[in-house]
Picture 1 (spheres, rainbow, N blue to C red):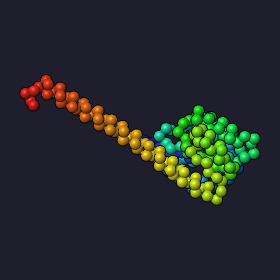
Picture 2: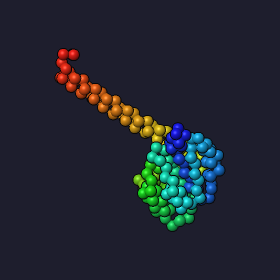
Picture 3: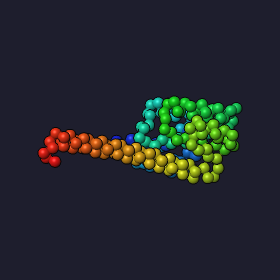
Picture 4: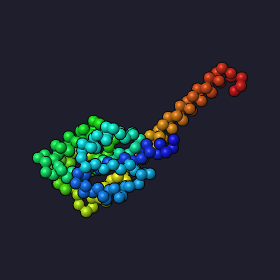
Length: 180
């Protein structure tokens, strides 16, 4: 039972890299099945097929690293990325998406952020370090969010317990005043 719970809370890291530019580095860095579940894809189509078959649980941190190599030659790379993000958001929510690209996208950055991209990383020698920092920050944010939610639930239960105890005490005092 505990093993299954551990698997459900594993961080899910997805890598879509058609040219396998960052594949080896990311696989080497996050090949720790006790902490992460890393899945790498060479196409968006395979990613969406797997996502339909095996949806990640809501309790797991979900990080998607999208290396936009193919979109450099597309007529409108922003339109293709936005279409991909719309499809992702319609299938599953809660993904923290980073786009790794060597193309300058200053004017498109606002539209991508509105579509759900958390970060746009330039594809240079520091890209792997920035990906690593983003993944760790994303998992930390998710862990903090889950702990806050657990604390809120515990506080609600404790408050309900205190209210119920107070009501029972008040009812007992009204029904049996000779004992108080």
